[in-house]
Length: 136
Image 1 (cartoon, rainbow, N blue to C red):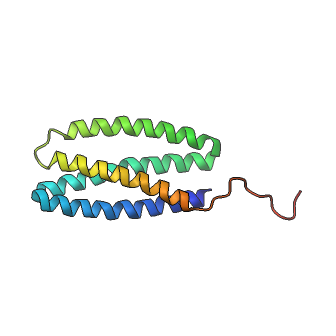
Image 2 (cartoon, helix red, strand yellow; image 1 turned 120 degrees about the vertical axis):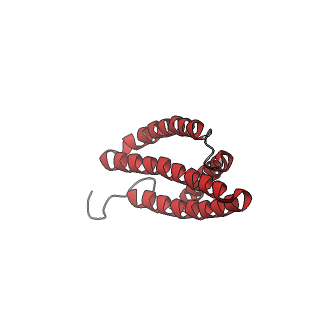
Image 3 (spheres, one colour; image 1 turned 180 degrees about the vertical axis):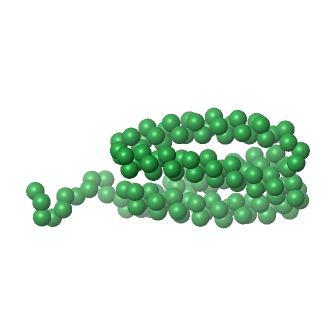
């Protein structure tokens, strides 16, 4: 189970990083240095928040697989509230483009979620782990 989770996370990170690079380039083209900085901050915020989720769910799965879903839900709620607080706090800054930060964050969150769904759907995961062939 952890091997499949790690595979999904690795592929989702790669896809999201590629989209982040594109968003930074687009933001730099649209709004110059402030746009690029806003996009970089947005990408960093998304990376930190999804990194927290990966760590929490990964640790919960190692301790008890049944607790994994509860840990995922609690981390989701905490991340959602935390992300809202961070975005409101950063929205008043003039050092970077808050709009491009927000746009980048939205695009990367959607990219991460879609990548995880598509990759998970393509994996062939056993729903029941078979017993070893010599034991009964």
